[in-house]
Image (cartoon, rainbow, N blue to C red; front, side):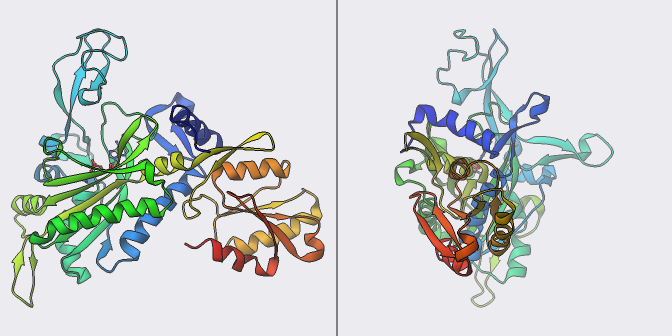
Length: 439
Ligand code: GAP
């Protein structure tokens, strides 16, 4: 059963801490509100989200290649991209209590949410979201560098390098997953808006006349990705930006939004960035950034369609969408009904008892399945409680070794959602699981 929206947020935050998905950064020092650490199961969920994105955007396509560009970058990149002037949010201060807010995110722009004062805000000023630091031992303005606020620019600045080495021609894309940093005025809603986060972005370079067609294509493709990984259709929507919402580089943008406990909010933006970025970098660097077809002699600056998703935000959305509570034998069972491709562990190996005679065959079963899938092994507590723990972290299959195993060389395999149990011969276990855990 789905949990009502009012309670869902607290339940998922609580589960995240209790079961090791997400911890507050620097918790032992009182916590650092704007960044989070991913625990033993959280890191697996996040890796799986990124892996599924990579499979669909790179592995399964011959028209997209990967990149891993640097995080530290010189001001020239951000001057050319427009981020030094335009990557700002409107900042207001409350004159009464000194709290600072992003003006466009205030529920009531005349009421301070911290102290309740009316009409106490200063005039909004534009606050640049980029983090600046210094490279090298001399701290002066010549050594200033920025932490990238998006992964995208590395794909534009490497356009010619990739074109020359990959033998691709438009339409083709460059994909990248990596950390980005934004000095958000008001981080919040758990890992939804943080100052350090991960993005999954792809820049798709197309002939200029084809950009509208490819924009539509990528909107559909990306919606299907979430649905195919089990996100509920009524949790998702595609929202077209009004013209006054468009970023400085965009001709058209649609957001894929998720129904978060606080309302619809962005998971991913799909933008038609035109030839803005390639032209800007070409002008600023003095290098031509264009496609030259040696067969037809045609030369042009490709236009760019960019599906830009947040990995950390998406992982959180999958967690919220999958969390359910059910009543089983008069008790509440919390279960993460994650698609098995996203589940942190695919298999849990559980000896029924801690007795020595069951430990050895259990370790043998573990050794058999562990090379194929991420497995958890747990031999403490009653079996019912161990099943509940695996349900709560979304493990699709629990394999139990019991005293009969010693006789029949078989194990019990329990499926998470139906709780249905099958007796499976150890010899056939890998085949049994392989047919269900399709990557
Ligand atoms: N290159 C385009 C770009 O960066 P964006 O809409 O600013 O576009 C893309 O960011 C995605 O990155 C967002 O849809 C969101 O999922 C994620 N994202 C952006 N800022 C974030 C933040 N402060 N914390 C977590 N995720 C964030």
